[in-house]
Length: 415
Ligand code: GTR
Image 1 (cartoon, rainbow, N blue to C red):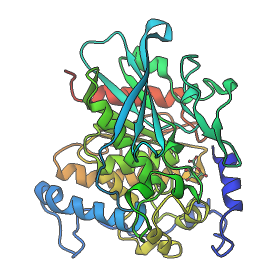
Image 2 (image 1 turned 180 degrees about the vertical axis):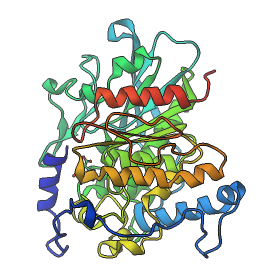
Image 3 (image 1 turned 90 degrees about the vertical axis):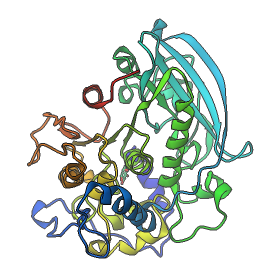
C-alpha cells in the first residue's frame, strides 16, 4: 500500500505545509521522553481505583484523544441496510457468503458494502473477525461470487475494480483458514465511506453529520472507525453471529482505525492492531520512523486539525498512544510489528502496549507479561498480547495464525 499511495498524496499537499525532516532510524536518537501517566487525572491527582478509571479517567482520556488527535465522533444516526446476496454453498460448501449494503448517510450518500462469510459447520453463533480492506471486497478471496467492488484508481477515480484483481489480497485475509477454525469474517472497502485523499471529506459520510469542520472535528480515521461500529450494529442483529465475540482488526492505517474504533466502542471483544505505527500503536513521542509531523504532512485528512499543532512539539501532547491501548482495557488487545517495518517503529509499538499494562492491572486483569521486547516470532499471548515477526509491512498467514490463537485463548465462551 505504502509506496503507491504515498507518492500521489505528497504531490497534492499544499506547498505551505512545511516539509518534515528525514526519518530517524538511530535508536540512540529516538528521544528521552516522559510519557503522560494514564493513571493521573488532568488535574494531577492520581487515579486510585478501578471505579475512578471507569467512571472518570476513561472518559477524560477519550475526550483528550477526540480533542487533540482523531476528532469527535458525532452521535449515531440510524441507518438502513439491505442484504443484496446470499450463497449458502460458498467456498466449496464450507461457508455462507452474504453481501449487505449499509447507507450510513442516507440513501443519497455513500454505500458501504459489507462482505460476510459464516462457517456452515458451527455450534451456535459464530464469533467474527471484522476489519476493513484496502483494495475492495473482491480482492479478499478468489471466490467468483463476490461482487466486483468500485475502487479508487491511482488518479483518484472511482470505478469497478479489475476482474483480474479477484483474490489478489487473499493472503492478507485467510478466509478459508478462519472459516476452518470456526470464525466468521466480515469486511468492507474502507474508502466506501471516505475516499483516502485530502479532498475526500466532501463526498464522504461526514457532511451528512456536520457541515463545517471544527478544529476538533472527526476526519477520515474517525469516519472509518464510525463505520466499523455500524458494521457491528448490523452484525449484532444477525442471528448467526455472536455479538459478544466480535474481534476487530486492521492493518496499518486501518490498524490505527481499529484501535480508535475499539477504544470508543466497548462492544468489540478484542482489538488487533497489525503494523499500525504512527497514530496507531507506536508512541508519538519516540522519534523513530514516521513522526507526527510527517503523518500530518502526508495525510492531512486522517486526523483532526488540532493534531497539526503538535508537529513540532510532540512532547506537549496530553496523551500518547499507550493511553489509546489503555482505553481498550480490560478487553484483550493484540499488537503486532514486523521487524523490517521500521517506518512503523516496532519498538515504539511494543513500548506502548507495555505501558498500557498499569491500567489493565488496576482493573484487576493481566496486562502484558513480557517485560522486555520479545524475540522474533515468539508471540506473547497475555491479555495485552504482542508479536514481532520477520519480514516487511504486511498481514501474513503467520499473523493470522496468531490472531486466531489469541482469539481462541481470550474470547468469552460461545453461546
Ligand atoms: C504509510 C503511512 C503509515 C501507514 C501506511 C499504510 O504511508 O505513512 O502511517 O498507515 O501508509 O496504511 O499502509
